[in-house]
Each structure stands twice: as structure tokens, then as C-alpha cells.
Image (cartoon, rainbow, N blue to C red; front, side, top):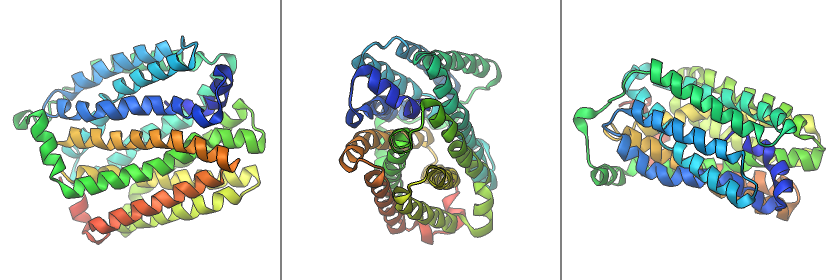
Length: 371
């Protein structure tokens, strides 16, 4: 999935589609993930999460490999949809397992380490995907599918069984009934959806902005994304330090406000290097904030952690779906990054108010990290 933004201009040209609908190549994966995440969570709760992950890896490898044979826009949408479905059975198991196997005081830190892994994939995957695409647009898909098979084998050998909650197994509908009656979980999920819609609108069209406004080549975009990905990685690794110093609630509020300010400034920048610096700072704060998102979401339940993880991922990918569609329209209407950046700032402000209304910023830190 991380190769999609740099490849958007290339694939849009190859398929003969406009920028306004190119975002659907992002949204297809997101729709598949978000839709089936609603099912994968309750299925995983009370079962061996290792087996769920392994089957998900296999399906992801196959569907991604098929993307390399997508000779039409419609075929690409189908295979990306299937890849998203497969991934929905993998990543939620990670977030669901951390609060159970890690000590309370280390949850935010370990969430940060897991987020750092995602950041590394962005830091390495996006530029490598761009460089490989210079050879052939098919190559990144083939490499990713091979990497998925390698991960499948490594997890099969090294990962222990993760039958967390086997003694508290609950039916599919009962699990959802419990979540739907959890008002705090619903508020957090809604705020997370709003935030991710704004955030993905920004990242999805970075390559289009850099290409159209600053004349960067595909390789140049990949190189530019290294610094942006590095910012996200550093934030993920050291965000827990900020939480430890000033508290989770203050850190969360400060980071949301910082992102709003950065996105309000960004569209008025006319120099590439200034834009690069501001985006790097923005994704530094994104790295800070993501572990807090996952920690607060996991704190809302004890018996439906996979379901909450799946719903949070569904919210993220529904947000990405909206971002791919809305961002394309905004970029076309404003002929610049103005509409996208202001849209993101507005949505993050709305998310901040939702969290404030839920009482998060008034809660004790120990309450937000409890099991």
C-alpha cells in the first residue's frame, strides 16, 4: 500500500484517467480493508491470532502479485480491493495483542515501536517502490508479494500461538453489541475516522503536488518521501518520551494543535524545500500521535480488543477512501494544494473537539492506559 502515492501519476497516465479519479486506486484497497475489518475483528477475538495472520499474509501475497498483471484500471481496482480484504485479517492482531502481553506503563512505548515498523515501511517502501517503478510499474507489486511470503514463513516459524481471550470467547453479534453500547469507544472511533480522512488527504496527493507544482520526477518524489517517512519514524520512536514528560492528554492536545497549524501554513509555500520541511514536521507529529490513538482506543475494552483494532483500522481506511475521492476533487478545483491542506486542518480541528467532548483531555493518564 505504501507505494501507491508515488505511483499515482504514472498509473493515471498509463490507464488514461484524470487526477480527480486517480485516488480510487488508493480507495479500492481501503474499501476492501475497511469493509472486511468489520468481520475480521469478531472472528479473531478468542481465536489463535497467529493462524489468522498467516492466512491473511498468504491472501495478501497472491492478490498483490496479481496487481502486477492489471492491464486496465478496473483490474487494478479489483486486485487492490482483494489485497485490502486480506490485510484486514493481519494488522489488527498486532494492536490487539500489545495491551495484553505488555505491562501497562510500557503500552504507549510498545505501540510506538509497532508504529515505527509501519514508518520504516513508509521510509523504505515508498522510495524503493518509486525507484523500482522506473524499471517497470509491475516490479513494486512483485517485490511486495515476495516480501509478504517471506513474512509468512518467518511468522510461521518464530511467532508463538496468540490464543488471547480463548476463555472469554463471545459470539459475533454479542461482541458488536458490547462495542455499540460503549459510548467512549464510539466517540474515539469517530474522531479517529475524521482525523485519518484529513491526514490521508494530505499524504495521498503529496506526489501529485510535488510533480505539478515543483516539477519533481518519479525518482525525485521517492527521494523526497525519505525525509517525510523519517519524520514519521522518529516521532513513532520518541513520542512516548513526550507522553512521559507532560502526560498523555497534554501531549495529545499539543500534537493535534501543531498539525492544524502546519496544515494551515503549508498551502502558501512556494518553495519545495520549505514544503518538504513542513511535511516532515507534520509527519513527525503524526508519528507522535498514532501510538496515542491506538492506546486510547484499546483502553475502552478488555474482551473485544481485536474488534476495536479492526474497527479502528476500518475507520482509518474509510478515511483513506474519502481522502482519495475528496482529495482528487479538491486538487482539481483549486489547481493546487490549498483545498487539500485547509480541508485536512478543518477535519483535525473537528476531531480535536470530538475528543474534548468525550472528556479525554480531562481524564487521568492512568485511566487512558488501563486495560
